[in-house]
Length: 129
Image 1 (cartoon, rainbow, N blue to C red):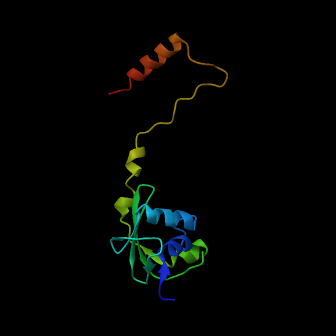
Image 2 (image 1 turned 90 degrees about the vertical axis):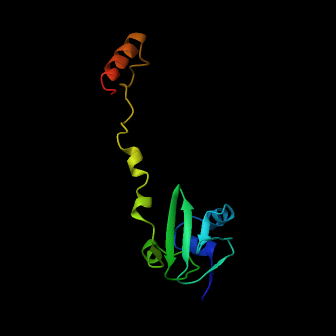
């Protein structure tokens, strides 16, 4: 086996949960093989670089091994080398910095009254700078 369909390979190495998802992403032009848009039926070989746009991330993989059947995660990792930059993998981590948990009101306390709301707003105004 020297060539495999890209949708099969992406599914087999567990980048996508189903082969249909892999095919749909090919149709949406989210998959590139060696910087060229790929159809689901495009063939890949060992050494090809596969670019995947998934969940807001631009992932890059180098194919090390060709497989058609889905395998377990430890075996799937051996089939590719992840070339995605560390910066790309952590690009959303800064977004969560400083985000507080939502305010929680005691169960059964009901909605805040006008007086409660004013007290809460006065309290919050002291922290906004």
